[in-house]
Each structure stands twice: as structure tokens, then as C-alpha cells.
Length: 440
Picture: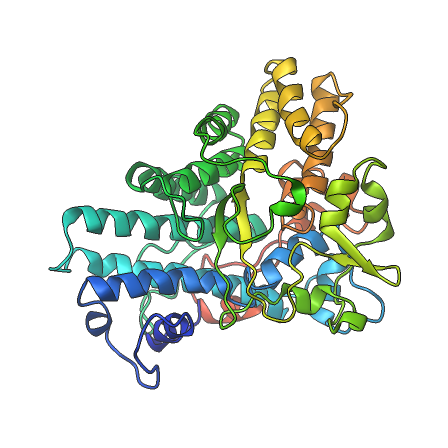
């Protein structure tokens, strides 16, 4: 949230998605941009486009969750010092990549809020069309708020549009309040969105799946289990051969971010080694390579490639075009959410084992040996690390389960489990309750 936010930002984002034929050289009023159904649709696409930002799913957000944890490290010959800070768990508030995550998420929220504010005034939309548009936008807003919560903790909740200098001095809301708003937006989205096979836009099942994740992170295990079960029981998705998952619109994907040769996914630029024309700002450490079970060749070969024994993450490795979509939610997560929710609420052990084994069997592995709640939770933590390697889950898993201090040698204080609020936000948001996270 910058001190001055011009509406031209919205136009620039949307035009980058090639969906708005307006040159963003001059500012334009919200009324002029959103005067009919076509304008609303372009605005919705603009809200989705914010997810493709370089500072978001375009690269930083996904890589930092593995880099702050133990799935990736910053090689000694790499040059991006902002990445070195994250790897060392010693992040400065002026870290520009952290600011990119913050700014990108609030940009998406602000675009969504601008469109939401105008929908009721659009004459050529039916009430059903307006409701569907609101549901889609509230899904987008919920995902943005939730992602911010997971990196920064208590954050400002933004429910109204920020245009110009109005509405930028906003206090941080409590973690509980942020969860409440995220859940409210998702419940509305789940109720109003249709079932759809389209993966790059919100659907009923995408809202249900995201609710399952939100409830798990919040510790509402009965609800997490129920929502995960709904997605599984829908039979709308299937567990594929592991090397077939990471293609656009695969049948395992529930929701993904759409990238094109124009709005490029730039993960490969920092993940591929120099020999393949990448920068190798991140790489899997030896401990990660050794974490795979000897028989787990399917997942290892699909997740990691090497050139001259230099290993690199391979799920998103299209350096040439950058047009690979990034998966946010997929069916495998629903099985492991259900397993974890049951284990944490001391549910049926056979059912917990069965859900873990669904994932293991897909990988060509034998049944888990875990048979107690403690060992089952350890097994789930391990399966999540391997199953979702380089998909941006690991840091959040260790933080939400209070395991970061036990697992990560450079995390010695609970203050390190939250990223610092970006310095620019601290300097420009003048609300007295906008405070820096403790320890920074």
C-alpha cells in the first residue's frame, strides 16, 4: 500500500494481461473504467493479473517459502543479496523482494475492491452475473489476505478501494480478525461460484479447497477435514502420475495462476544453473537431495533435474517462454489436509494412514510405518515436504506447526518466524497502529 496510489496502476496491470484496450498514460476515473459488464470483466482479469507479478507467483512468493526453510538455499556464488537474507533468516525491512510480495498482494486486493465497489451500479449485468463477479473477486481478495497473513502475521485488512491518498493509513488487524475476513470471503465465494473445469479462475471447488487450507492453518481441524473431504468426494479431480501434474490445467490442479509469454513465470530464471542460462540464485541443498527415500524416484525425478551434477528445481523450468502456469491448489493437498486434521484431533488411525498411503502409493512407495498420532504427524510433515517440494509450502508448514525453531538451524527466535513489514509501508502508513513486527 503506497502512500499515493493512482488508478493508472489498475490500468497498467490489466493492460499487461492484454485485456484492456486503454493506454495507461493518463489517470482515468473508476466510473470510466467500470461502466459496463465488459469493463467489470476486464477488471476481474486485472485482479487475477496481479498474481503474476514478479514479486508474487511470478517468482518471489513461491521461492521464498522454500528458501526461508530447508528446501532451497542461496549458493555462495549467487548475487541476489535479498535472497541471501531470506536464506539466512536475517531479513531487513528494506528488502525489496519482501516489499514486492506485500505490494503485489495489496495491489490485487485494491483492484478487487475497486471492481467490487462498482458492480452494483452496472446496468447491463443481471443480478446473477453481479453475484458471480462478486464471488470471484472475494476469492481473489481472500487469497491475497491469506498469503500476506502467512508471511507477515497481523496485517491491514482492506475492504474498500484506495484511490489517491485516501484510505492508505490503515492499522494492522489481529491474526484472528484476518482469518475471520478471509473465511467470510471464501464462504461467500463457495456458495455463489459454479463448479467449473477452468483452473485459472476461481470455482466452487477452488473456494472449498482454499477453505480447507485456511481452516487447517487456523487450527479448526473439523472444518479443515470437512472441506478437504468435500473436494475429494466431488470426484472432480484425479491424482495423476507425478510427472504429469505440472502442465497447464492438469486434472489434479484445482486452482492455478495463468502465465503467458507476455505475463511470464520467471521462476526458472533464478532456479536454473548458469550452464542452462539461469542465474542459480536458489538451489536444493544436499540435505534436500538426501531427503527422498531411495525408492521415491518418481517424485525426485519430476521435482529435481541436474546438469553435470548441479541440481535444480524442475517443476517450473520453462526459461524460454515462461508460460507455465503455477499451481496453487491441487488434489494431493486435500488428502494430506484430511490426514493432518484427523491426526491433530486424534481421529481414526486407519483412516489417517489410508490418506497418507494414497499419496505414497501414487509415488510407488510402500505403506507408511507410522502408527501413532505422534509418528503420523511426523510422517505427514515429511510427505508434505516431499510432495510439495518447490511449490511454496515448506516455510508455512514449519511456522504454523511451531516446528521452525526445531528444524531450521538459523531460526533461533520466534520473532524470525514472521517476515518484517516492508520499510516503505512503515514509513508511509501513518496510522499509529501500523507497527513493525517484533525483532525488526
